[in-house]
Image 1 (cartoon, rainbow, N blue to C red):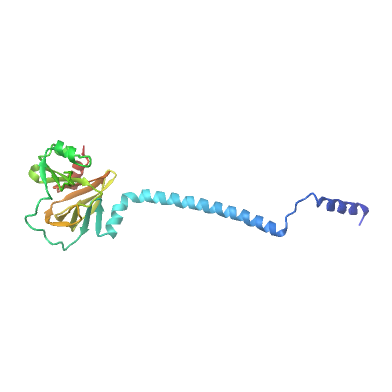
Image 2 (cartoon, helix red, strand yellow; image 1 turned 30 degrees about the horizontal axis):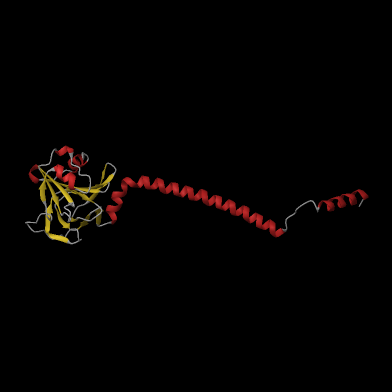
Length: 240
């Protein structure tokens, strides 16, 4: 070894006080931290991708939701109305009672008294009769009904936050109502009213004709009497 080599070694040793060389343990910690940050980054990317995939899936599945629900559920629900598929529904009595305390009023009075916006299908023209049913102590009705074509077509509306009707039917299917989901009952079915106390009023049970049921906002609608789904849909979409 030459004198020059010795001088170089001494100079390198002198540099030790100027350099902050981490201990091996510190290096391991630093490496772990870097790896952890990379791992978190990868998880964030994966999570974002997963969320995006779920969002796309939900959007894609939404139009098919009716078929999915239809395949797995025997009970279909729209706010305030429950439809149970049943092949053994007992036939209702032949002379059902009207809804509790039902009374005929003008459309203007119905709009004033109802606790929700009263709308009517413009496609059907002015109703021949408007009824208010099941009022509270202040006379505020729970259900507003409109009759057309000599009573062959009936249009009920009520606040969907409280249950009002039970139905038993052989055939019930989900249909799209311009963004709102609806239930179409294509055949005769048993209809029972549930009063303000939650009691089933079997005295009102009757055999109802084909019916379209849907909800918009806080109001649930029930349009009965059309044998064609398309005709019922046209009338339902003309609410004004």
